Length: 212
Length: 212
Image (tube, rainbow over all chains, first blue to last red; front, top):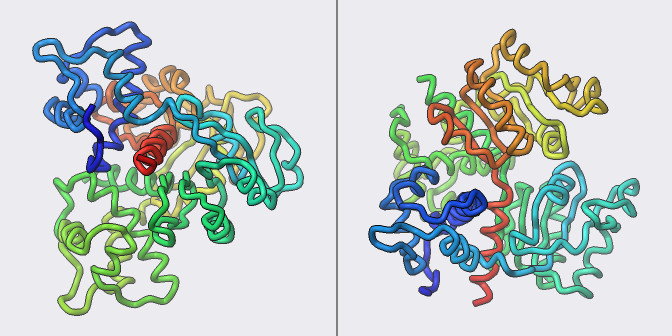
């Protein structure tokens, strides 16, 4: 299959959505889908669907559409969801708890191996099947255990305090819920930011526009 | 100023980031910034910055750059953050708690007026200064109180159970943390989705790509 080198991030960012919808269709027993119908589910044009999937080699068959299971499996491969990247979570506050409890890591290419927090009341308690450790142990943990990614569910100023040391330890991949701009300080890192308040501002804008 | 009609969503989605960075610069006492420097902070090209801001009328001065405070205020106006849209939160689990406690609603154009949950242990307790109500009261609440938006921090199947009634009550704006595809069922709604697991899948893809 064609490699995805040079694929734009906007195409990449649509892949998880394709994957989610195809997984649903597959579980509903749907065997095939036209690019028009897939486009309608994705809320993009059929031409966009064909263009997106062509980036990775194209999987459609003229006059047939896409085989749901094959396409789902292909996108799973492209995303690399069969990986089991070792990740640790820093921060077991409400957000960290939501992440640890509700995200299906193994189906997203990850395995959560440890959780760290600074709150003495949380340390030693269990979260998502993992005993929370003291956050000052995270460096030693990362030294002794292969750690592919760190999930940061701590505030911006706390990220500022830990990021240099994590970087020194060789950590290059971050799932970042804070507003600390890791990629600006360390351009050679891979950072996925989840900025909830940006999303809320966008909602505000769109409500305004609707009312004009 | 030029209205933002017909502005692409990718430009819109960058505005909250501009706003965040400009707010920071402003609080650090920075008075002006060149499009090159703003581009570097935003991790886009200087030409992209000029193009983005030109969509709304353009605020730069040749040879000077942008006045940080003016540009921040302009984007604040464009986003409509001085609004106080009345919103209610459905779901006071970990995610709902994180949202209620950590999002600065008033600076994002919203006011959180009520929180609903079905857990008897949560009902009657306080969250972010608001007493949690029984979730079966949400419809009556929305009938009696102007409700501009509902924030959905409940699972997909729970959204499925409430969405028709909320729509019937005239609610058209949703901040949606579930995987339920509201806009597909009700195309005339404004929905901002926060799909954390999509972000995690993108991280997985990018780690793969890095290792190739």
